[in-house]
Every structure is written in C-alpha cells, then in structure tokens.
Image (cartoon, rainbow, N blue to C red; front, side, top):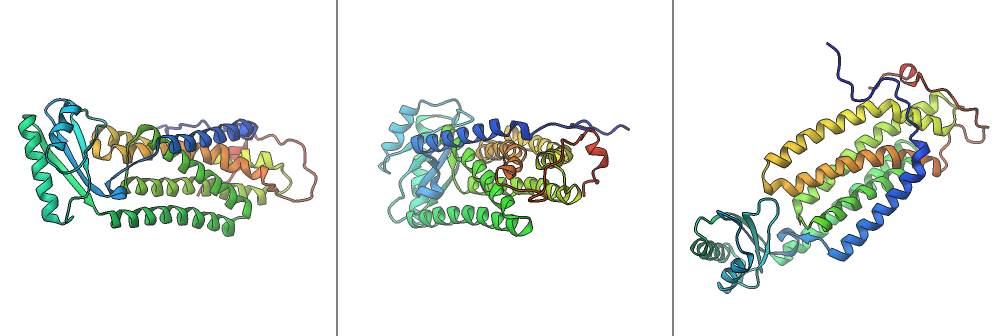
Length: 323
C-alpha cells in the first residue's frame, strides 16, 4: 500500500529567498493586529470584567431591541447583548448583583429567564456564569502573567538548548503568533475569556514544538555541513522537516474543523483561536523564525569564507531520518 505524502520527496523550496517578503508581511500584520486591538478593544468575557452572564436560546432569531427592553425592565442593571454563531442563541451580560452570593445570582437568573420565556414563547435558559470584580482582576493578572512567563521561559530554553539567536527568533515568532490571535479576537469580537487564554497557551506550546524540531535540524546540519552557506543549511533543514510540519498541521486542523462545526457555539471561540494559531504558527516557524537566524548573524563556521552554492537536489536522501 502506497503511503500518503502531502509533500513530495526531494522537495527543495528556497524559503530563505522569500524572507524579505515574509518579514515585511509579518511586520504589516503585527502592526495591523495591534491597531485593531487598540481601536476596537477585546470583548472581555465575564471572567475578566466581572458580572453575570446569561445564555438564552430562542425558537427563532429574536428582536434585540425587544429583548433589551424586557431585561432592562427587571431592574438588574444595564444589559449588554451579543450573538455569534447561531443567531437564535443570545448572550446577556448584567452587572454584578447586590450581595453577589449564589442566592442573589440564582434569583436574577430566574427572573430574567422567566421574563424572556413569557415575552418570547419557546425561549429556554441554557447556562450562566458569574464572577466578582475582585476575582476578575486577579484572573486578568494571572492570565497575563502566565502568557508572559511562558514566552520568556521558552526563549530561555531555546537560548540554553541552542544559541542566543535561536532564543531571540523564537520569541519574535511567538509574539507574532500572539499578536495575530489578539487582532483576530478584536476584529471578530468573540468573547475573550479564560478559555481563550488556555487556547493562547496551547498555541504557544504547538508553535514551540514546531520551531524546536526545525531548530534542532538546523543545528544538526550546522555540525554535519560545517562549511556550507547558512542560507543553504536553513533551506535544507526546513525542507527536511517540511513533511512532518505539514502532516502535523493538517491532522490537527482536521480535528479542529470538526470541533468548530460540531462542537457548538460555546467552543467556537476557542476552536477558532486554535485554528488561527496552527496556521500562523506554521507560517512563522517556516518563514520567520528560521530565516531570522541569518539576520541575527548565526554562522556554522564564524570567520570562514563561504563556499559556492551547494546542490541540494538529493538533500532528502542524504539527510538522516527524522527521529
């Protein structure tokens, strides 16, 4: 039985030749992501802003103005309404209720649910969540701290595991992936809650796994071909690991797309973040992180004259098998 190969044998793509375009695109996307994030802001979930979130499912897409009137009439504070994915599912946000205990929260949920059921026959309560203001501030601090420590820890690992250039290129690529995720959530206005922080940390973990594989092959080839030009070493290393990179990304994306379409709207933001992270992480591993090593001055044999261009037509055959 013939094995499925998404990348043909003896692939020899000159990735480094496109590094100028890749750096320009990366910078442009990063600036746009930062701009969109500051302009639109993140739609922070109840986890981060505190308050009460009620999710209601209607028999048909409701009139948001009418829903707001019904909820505001309950005297629970100004309501914020949001729909995404299924237009029949509506998220209702309310300020933290007086007392903020379970009894007050349950009473508010029952009051809103009963009023909506009466005004919109067929409406059903789905779920609710509540977080106090103090807890939300702690969650914001801990979430930001977790992401920052993860990035710094990964950068330090790459520096001690390889050389300082690998650590810098890894941090740059991960920050790029993180900015793309923030820009995506600012643009789509999906809820940004603790589930998304978990998705961001997962994206960072996937990205570093992909980058470490490529970096390890680059270091291995630097030792194997000590007088080869650094451009050729990077192209050789990326092409050798390309089948693994593509196969891993495709299989993960298949599972994520199934979760996106079949997992329900509750997981839609988490899944969308993961899909974006896999695509952006694969791009940054191939075009940003590896090519940036040249700009940072990494050399196989510092001080030696670079040899002529090496023919890599048989690179896949002469390279060691991936472990």
